[in-house]
Amino acid sequence: MASFKSGFISILGRPNVGKSTLFNRFLGDKIAIVAKRPQTTRDRILGIKNVEGGQLIFLDTPGIHHGGSELNQRMVRTAMASARDADVLLFLVEATSPRAEKDREMVDPLRTSSGVPFLVLNKIDLVKKKSLLPIMDQYQRLFPFKEIFPVSAVTGEGTDILLDEILEVLPESQPYYPGDMITDQTERFWVSEIIREKVIRECYQEIPHSTAVTIEAFEEHPEKNLVVIKGTIHVERNSQKKILIGRGGQKLKKIGEAARKEVEAFLGTRVFLDVWVNVEKDWTRNPRALDRLGYPLALNHSP
Ligand SMILES: Nc1nc2c(ncn2[C@@H]2O[C@H](COP(=O)(O)OP(=O)(O)OP(=O)(O)O)[C@@H](O)[C@H]2O)c(=O)[nH]1
Ligand SMILES: [Mg+2]
Figure 1 (cartoon, rainbow, N blue to C red):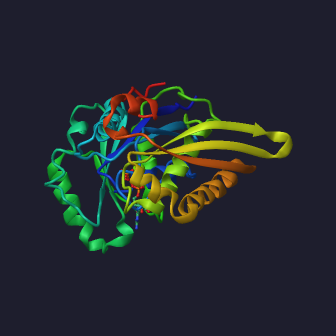
Figure 2 (figure 1 turned 90 degrees about the vertical axis):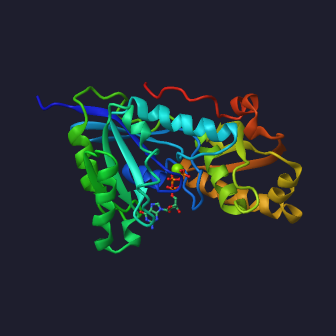
């Protein structure tokens, strides 16, 4: 009988390099939220891809960065934890702004993991092909990557080759998850992320990293082809609440509508989405508030 392969592939790198975009590309679905802005992903997001002869379990992670708040530190810890036991590590960098020297400490999590390290040079759709070789050379000197893959997560260029090589190096193993499962995140969590994405897209200038979203109710009414969802956007200060709501409630309405449309398309039902705003003073610095709002200390990802 042909052997079966399965394992965990952790996607790591600085904020905004395209980790979540690549993750979604592999999974063929928008499982993780994406934004033009850095520090969008805050959790370890798991996505399962079944192919002939294998099951690939991708872990999208928060961008590795230095930041002051407890939230920032927990995000980075989450990323590090997902590297620890991974079988393959995809270290993502942008071909548009290579900085091998500055990435010296970024590759630290690769040193302490037994996973096979691949360098993924993303966003090659934005640069001339001839600029790639010197960048690959710089990174090869920085760390003994097993291989380097130039890709574009947006166009898909190079991603099939990368997928084949990942499967190649995965260990022989039974699948970890049932064949019909695509993620371990709940619909509730996904909806909270979609709302947070719309907030980032609408209000990043004014409220860059101060929002969290919780879902208080998620009631399914199949007989009416309807799901009723109640969510709360938490901000750190009163002034932020005002910005988020906007004049005459316009901004919050826009955020709610954009989120509702996407959730409706995803769930395939009508959705009634009720979104509130709450001030949770300085929550990004408060360990107890972080626990409550969905950002506990990093756990291991193993099933
Ligand atoms: N042109 C181009 N843009 C890309 C590519 N990959 C990602 N992007 C864009 O880069 C931005 C950041 O993408 P994300 O996938 O959110 O990046 P991330 O690494 O997950 O960011 P964090 O979660 O904040 O760490 C988005 O605007 C993407 O559309 C690519 O291959 N080419
Ligand atoms: Mg991300």
